[in-house]
Length: 181
Image 1 (cartoon, rainbow, N blue to C red):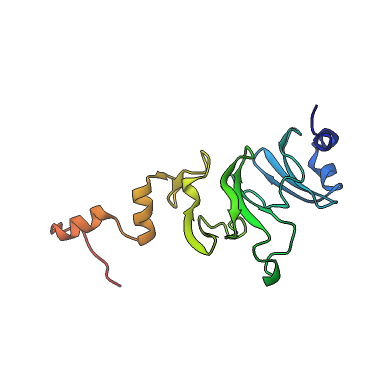
Image 2 (cartoon, rainbow, N blue to C red; image 1 turned 90 degrees about the horizontal axis):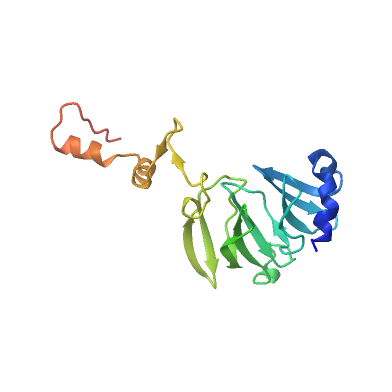
């Protein structure tokens, strides 16, 4: 006994025809986020298998790094009278909630392709690094040349220094230099 909506949508595995019956269709790897014309959101595989049933969330944003921001509460965000009437969370490509849908604020990350976002629950703010919750291989961090780097090296790149460069400079290595701009 499958979800009838997904059974009906299997005939639309061809995305071109699916788009004729949906308001929004966002593709990412092997999954498709769909908003049907009736405003119900769901996620299915590119083969037509159900991942997130339509109507479970009132909004599912496009995936980025194998993650999608979801919302429960069918009210407009940004209107102060609606504050607190909705909650945010994050799902992975399998439809599992990796951040539970209980946050009053959760920064959008797919449009700006941010990897560090802020979230709040009951006016208590905290930072979230998407690399910590992203599924493999989206959690691999690379340098500008596409080489995989470890977390310590990544943090140093963000600060624009390497500890071994600093050590070399302090050890008097004539090949080492320190650019203080």
